Amino acid sequence: MDKNNSKAWLYLLPAMIFLGVFMIYPLFDVMIYSVEEGYNSASQTYFGIGPYNYNYVLRDPYFLQALKNTFILVVITVPLSTGIALLISVGLNSIVKLRDFFQTVFFLPYVTNTLAVGLVFMILFKKTPYSDGFANLLITAVGGTAVDFIDGPYWAKMFVMCFYTVWVVLPFKILILTSALASVNPDYYKAARVDGTSRLRIFTRITLPMISPMIFYLVITGFIGAFKAYSDVVAIFGTDLNAAGMNTIVGYVYDMLYGDSGGYPSFAAAAALILFAIVLTITCINLLISKKNTHYA
Amino acid sequence: MHQNTDFSAIEKQAQRNERIRKVLTYVLLTFWAIIVLFPFYWMILTSVKSYSAYNSEYIPKLYTLSPTLQNYLDAFTAVSLGRYFLNTLIFTVVTTALMMVVTVFAAFAFARLKFKGKDLLFTLFLSLMMIPNELVIITNFVTITNAGLRNSYMGLILPSVTSVFYIYLLKENFEQIPEELYKAAKVDGTSDFKYLWKVMLPICQPTMVTIAILKVIECWNSYVWPRLITDDEAYFLVSNGIQEIRENGFGRENIPAMMAAVVVISIPLIVLFIIFHKKIMAGVSRGGTKG
Figure 1 (cartoon, each protein chain N blue to C red):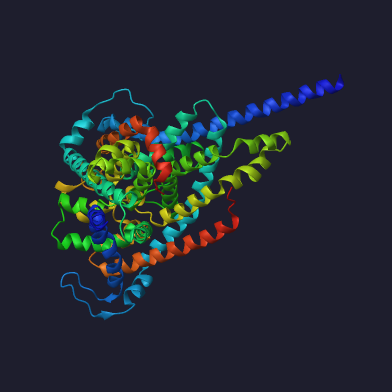
Figure 2 (cartoon, rainbow over the protein chains, first blue to last red):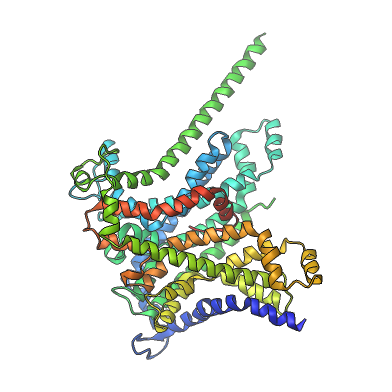
């Protein structure tokens, strides 16, 4: 038994070392960083302990801009992407022909490099002196005026950011919802059909309740993912997000840590912990709501 | 008689509604399929347009009559795309291989071996899943910098190795193998390691493949950590490479060459996806997260 005991720890050793060094130690270290005032990364010294870093971050206009951008992104993309995913999944579930084909196509964005495809989106939406770009071609075709979506007004930039985010997150949501819909027991539908229930009523009274746990799962992971938006935004607006006015909270953390405005791990740590607190709060609220409204079969 | 015609009218109406619904469904699905596929079409199309042709199109054309492969040559000669590619390949293969070894050992210990504090430790392991990357990356950045591992494969790979979730996934899979097999192996005097290697791994091969593919996708697309830890172009991965190309390579306006680079970067994963799409989709629906 004792021999077995030590052997087990030996098997666990590699995982423990990696997790210890790169996850557990950093978790405590980041909290220490966030309260060390005036930390200097060159000399590794600090003045004292206190909430100054949090105060600084919460007053930094760049952080407030990042906070605003992130909240707008979350509020728009989470409901929108979940709704579209539901619509598409219901559509997918109701057809037989070409179903596998559509399913495979819809999943494609999941495996593509976010940075690479983001560049394509940038080109589709960008207006240059040489060309208005493809998106503007469509807009002018229906009688609108061309807008520069990449360097232009705030709403236009926000639109591209939300559009690309939805494009990127939909594959996962469609996949989850399609398998959730397929797993609903068909007997319920047959029973409802015999009773002459209308389609809409079947959907709202049977389908939605049956897949509600999965919808809530997607909403929760959607919130968490959208709050952590970063690479997608970099892909479209480039690495200098503050200049574009499109920074996100995670982008702010990385900018503080590294890059042109970097070298302030204490501010980065404080911002990261603020983000964590926001995400945790929203997740808890979501869980409370879902407990009340979810029907487990 | 009157009754009869009514029924057929109702039935016809129902059939018509059904048909309209079907058409609408297909229209919706096709519409979204176009939105999904269009960026891919656009990048391939642009990558085969010549520089001068692209820049002379004030209104972008949806087709080209004189495709050229010059941009692909430029992508490999004017910027170090080949270098980025090789770096990413090394990074992906080594990280995935190391991750598999670490994961298999840990999952085996949790699934089959008996030791004190196992349940408590496993709960702690699971709770690690809640820790967001953004929180620990700050210290990891300092750790790797202080260890002098910036701009090195070690610095890129080491923090990317562990995945609590895959340990959990594999442990669940290992536990489905009947305990009797393990006992029989023990009676025969088979060592734990040999049992793991000869019995458990072959049985769990599908899960292993799924985990490996998901990790490969993750590695190939990773951007944040490589960006923090490398500023020497010799160690750029494709994601950082594409960002570098966008900001400094080719001259800002050579978009066809950029698109050629984007196509080259996207191809490996798309090929992987076409071969393994069933496995990847099943794997992701069991446990992937993104978004």
